[in-house]
Length: 102
Image (tube, rainbow, N blue to C red; front, side, top):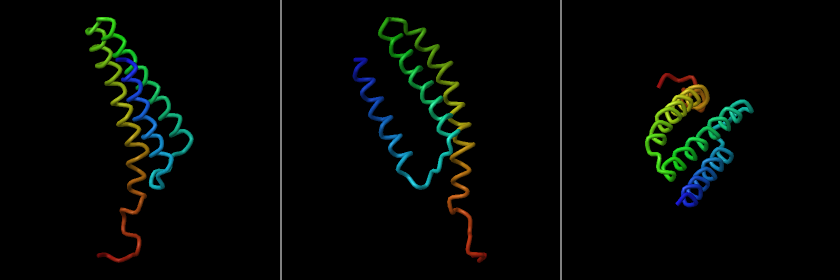
């Protein structure tokens, strides 16, 4: 069971990283990649902790880890989105650049 969790997690991670690298719409600086890597390692830790706690028969520890670590990761994901991706959507051509008022 745990092997299937990690296989699915790896496939989804590979697809996500491939999308970030190959897309031309999102330009990430080095510190953005570092922040993303730290967030990703936190996500891997959280998934590992929750899955191992459930498999060891400790659902209460898994639930607390999901609340605490999952909450922290959600907040960090929102901050990362607001700092990096939301700014790039504004710069990415949503504004009228030809000077007309249409």
